[in-house]
Length: 226
Image 1 (cartoon, rainbow, N blue to C red):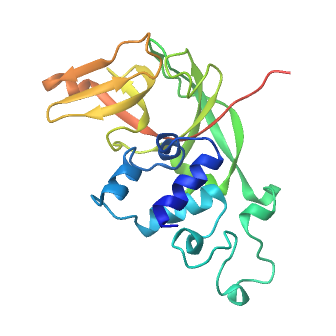
Image 2 (cartoon, rainbow, N blue to C red; image 1 turned 180 degrees about the vertical axis):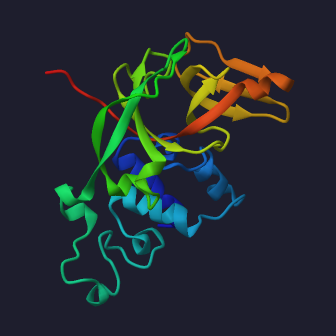
């Protein structure tokens, strides 16, 4: 199979869409169609993210081996090395990342900047970025269902811009914090809900300045009540 076919096969095994994968690991939402059509080629970083997500090697994706868990040059690895797929996270893998209040996935609330506690977070989730770049927010509302539900935690990487099509934590007029899919045009920005009962919010011209990107949503956790 080609690299694209292998990725499609991995997606089918997990019964998930390429779009969902793009949200999970921060790729452009059209990455698979762009690669299939030849508009773009998979970067080393993208392949590494996909390999990590599915717990396979990059060599497997590239067709260098049919053993999905084969890692070359293993004799050059540290003696205590074990691949991620073989072991659960240990305590040393985890960092305490602050939970900063809550943010609305509905009509909007004021984003609280006080610390509500800390959430153990895998170093792998930080993808090499410093832990100070991240914080968790608690979701309120239902506008992003079925991706995020009320009381879910979302991990935010601090950055003031995201690629069009990504989901971000956004501040409107300096006080209204929301989670929305962000789409850009030449002189407009749209904040899009996944729940179809909510209308898209569009800002044009000078009103674009009312929208401030607080960060990219890179992960979510669902707290199941028992």
